[in-house]
Length: 117
Image (cartoon, rainbow, N blue to C red):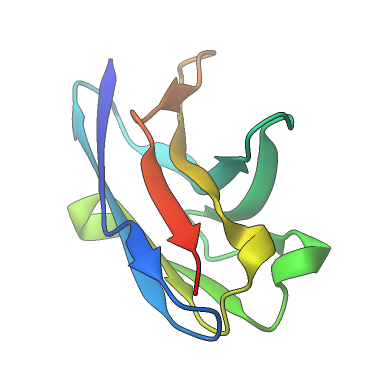
């Protein structure tokens, strides 16, 4: 079992920045990959960024150059630094974890990011 606790969401103006954090705890060997997904009203949940334990990363095209995912393996924590935020980045952001030796994926409760003037 993995519990994920997210923090760092909020209201920001266009062009602003936010940093999301997600800490994993619970009973697991280690976590292979952690990532951030988002879901805007009326839309499907989509991948924002993902990082493996070795540091390999994937980003949605819409956030490349603006968002940076990083990870502290010792703390089982993943971060998402977001800059140059746009109205269309408004969504609930969910943390995701893929533990080793566990076929399940785990999700956080979500944190709201609102970009508004």
